[in-house]
Length: 304
Image (tube, rainbow, N blue to C red; front, side, top):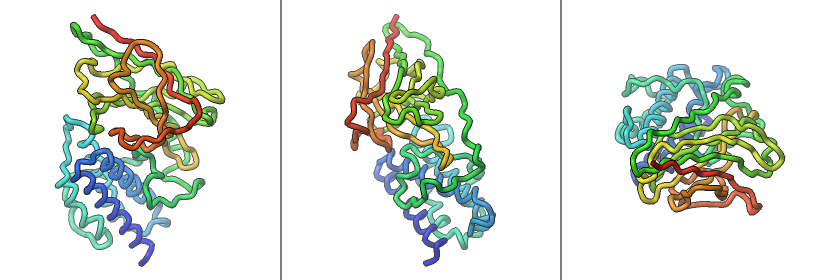
């Protein structure tokens, strides 16, 4: 089997794995698989003509498949998706990705290839089993394509309601053994239900204010976008620590932490750090380190 056929076979296996997870209701696993595969397809789309074995038309089709994978991922992450993309829609693309070398029909959906940028998989790229990149291997795009981050996507506090409490979480610092080496570190904050579905908009902090040998310091307030009383039983607030990897030219999740509802109380709290990939269902948790290194938070409750 040629290298190009092996690549297509791996893509098809990943696609089938994602749709199987989706069919079984394993949404977090499906999202991970879809976004990892989308990143691989996009990488091929962005490759130069000399380094790619696919024609420009085939790469355009691969780019459109990546868009559909992102649309399905987005539909699984929100209960109010405005551009819902159904599993049945996605499954119609299976014969296309399987037979990409001979496919010559119009694409079944009116979508455009994903813009030239990295697709950030929740668990980061190395979790794809067929990934075989060298640590120093070249990534897609130009060297400085992803080095500049926007200054966070934090949202203002919601209006108060009688007898309802709002929560402000100050992210103070995170303890890491290699804290000083992290480039452009920031934290993604999300509120998930027991199935890993978003209950509020996802927010990114600005890049950390400073670093030292053991801590990355943020000192930033995050306003949780739902009154505490309206959060369902089993919900949790997640904190994903991310940083930029210049050798691979993409942003990676290094570790994550979470707070459950019974931990919401005014004052200081330190919470444990877990190894990636982020497990929004909290089923397979593995501590990042045995050392006493934690995420340090300060909670403020606002109630009329």
